[in-house]
Image (tube, rainbow, N blue to C red; front, side, top):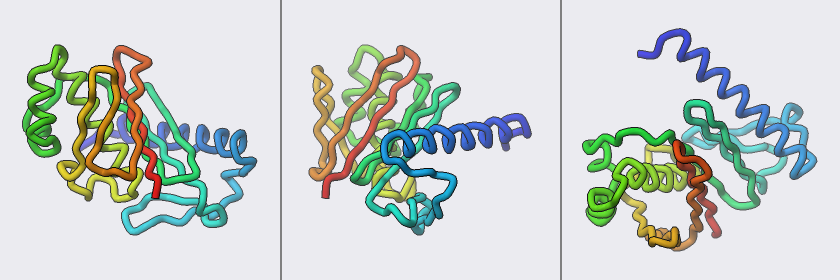
Length: 173
């Protein structure tokens, strides 16, 4: 169970995420977020009631906060690289993905590439982790080209830091 300081930290990140989103929506779309009504889907993914064609997502991990805005469904995830949990990997990764993780030079980094890709997908489709992450599978080539069994999606891994990995998913219907 998180302590009060951790809860305050999560709340502060939520508020900072909304501020970042507010700035981005105003700069990119001329929308004043604070004046907008928010609606949520059955899993809690928020949308702007008057601008259903605009999609957004926010993520944070430790001291890093990111948001994405798009004209198609979008999901973004960032994770601090740490020692991965093999039991967790068994629950979310395919056999081929586990093979790549176990045979790579940096198992922790490899796992979090797959994790952030999968998380960005489930956030883009709006279900969060209620969707089985094993259902979406990836091949990441050495040149970082990403192939996915979900053909209507495009993905990008962002590795601007040695300590974090982020991934973004756009769904093109």
